[in-house]
Image: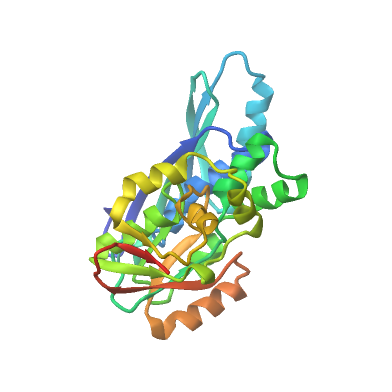
Length: 295
């Protein structure tokens, strides 16, 4: 965040990655929505974007046009302006955005501001890790693929706007570090412990089924090793569900820490805005041995 004056601050973010779906236009939409999400996760409004592209020489340039068109779909939907970009020859396709946003100095959301007693809500269901792995392996049907692509391409704009005037103490979006990684960030930043009610977490049914079959990426194993004893998972939590929690998300929802007294109002606002989830499933408590406890 760069402060412009007493009222406004500039936000600058960047994110890009290789394709997670075969359809080039959907890939562009998903990558753009993911990059724009960083601004929404700070309570801001995207104003400009720059394309970032890595493209192999041998690959049809018309496919790149589809990727960029998909990205533009989401930039326009966000109300931002595409101001150009940069491309390089690469061995692997990569696409994303550098996004500039504006946020009010007094309304900027940090990921470290949770307070003891705050309730945690999530605005999109979890499970894109196993689902995107299944898409790559061809182990999921077309209908489920379409639903997953639509979810990943959904902007977090409506969720952010719905609670813009609420008392949001902390926020982040759930992306590459998964629920457990981003949960640890929020808890450690606040010096608290995040207690998650596993059964209350919004999760796509097919994601748990895929995890039960072992259709997952390497992210859960890496996440468990990296986070170690910072995360405690109760014995009653199904292993497949825990795997989903550790897996990476692509263009996930916003995690919002709000006072318990305001949590019902925040959930109602999210539902009224049509967000894909509006689930309260965790609470911040006094610091325990672990940063995140899943029960």
